[in-house]
Image (cartoon, rainbow, N blue to C red; front, top):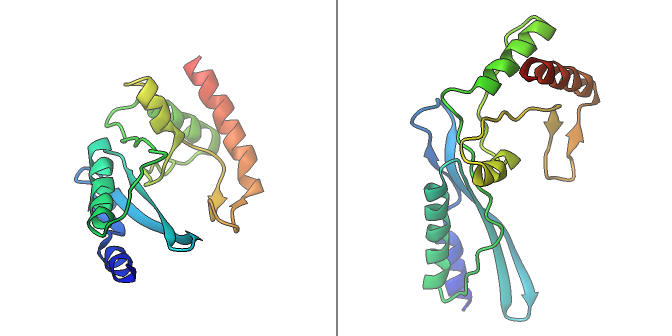
Amino acid sequence: TSWNLITALCAAPHGVLAMSQEIENFVETSTNLASVKMIAPGMIRIGSSQRSCVTAARRAAAAKMEACFVLAGAIVKHEGEYPGWAPAAESPIRDACVASYKKLFGVEPKVKAIHAGLECGLFTEKFPGLDMVSFGPTLRGVHSPDERLEIATVDKFWKLLVELLKRID
């Protein structure tokens, strides 16, 4: 019924669920009630996504979302799970990247952990313990119609990549 849909939508978690205990101001787990679409008369599809650098926390967030809609009488299907990637306390490749950046640009880079679905999580699933960094040119408005690449940052990224590859060769 409409009432079941409305109450499930109101009860569904949305936003930050947990902050990291190790990294200051770093969102560890979140859920996003992304879309509500009528796909046929009397049939509504609700899309959500859960992110976490901790797989168990991401799955728990998905279970919370599922519970809200199952209790309302919905059929729930999970698709497209995106694995998390937790920042490593020690990382030789990150250290090499920082050293390369300092050598090229004369300043200390800002090393950050971000709350996003990165391909590094996919690699970690296949190669546990693989030491990785994620970096690239500056992107704005990612995954939106306003997505933009700052062209001026591409050359800097390329120079850093080449220097890093020389350093780890």
